[in-house]
Image (cartoon, rainbow, N blue to C red; front, side, top):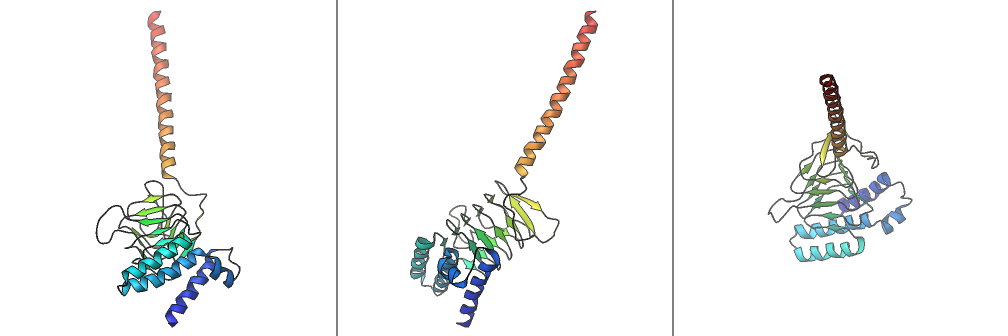
Length: 225
C-alpha cells in the first residue's frame, strides 16, 4: 500500500518537473489525462499479473475511452513516467518502459506484424519520444536517448543518441548524455542533408558540363578557321 502511494506521488511530481503549465496538485490530479491513464494502467497491470486478464482489459478500455490513451495491461512501466498531452498514445502489450521516461501525444509504441513473444519496443531510462513518433517492433531505445517528432524508428537506438526521420536515423552525440529538454523545432534532418549534398553534386556536374561545352565550341571555332 505504501509503495503504491509513493508511486502515485512520484507520478504527480514528475508532472510538475516536466510541465510548466502545472499549477497545483488539485489541478494535476483532476485534469491531467496522461496521469489518469498511467494510474489506470497500474491497476490494470496488477490485475494482468494476477491473471485477471478480462477485467484488466476492461479497465484499460475504459481508460482509453476517457483519456484517449491506450495502454495494454501487459505493458511494463517504470517510475516517473510522464505522458504529455496524451491523446492518441498507443503502448503495446510487450512494451517495457524504464524510469524517467517522457512521451508526447500521438506516439505509438507498437509491433510490426503478427509475430509472437516480445514484439514491442523497450524504452530504457531517461528516454524521450516526441510528438507523433512511431517506435515499432522488438527494438530498444537506449538510455538518455531522444526520438524526434514524426520519426518512424524500426531499429535499435544506442544510448545517448537522437534519432530523427522516416525511417529513423541516429545522430550520435559523441557519447555525451543527451538532455531530456528536446527542442522540437531545431532537430537535425539527415534526409534534408542528403538532398543538399545531391544538389551540390549536381551543381558541380553542371559546371563541368558547361566547361566541356565551352572547350568543344572553342575547338570547333579553331578548326573552322
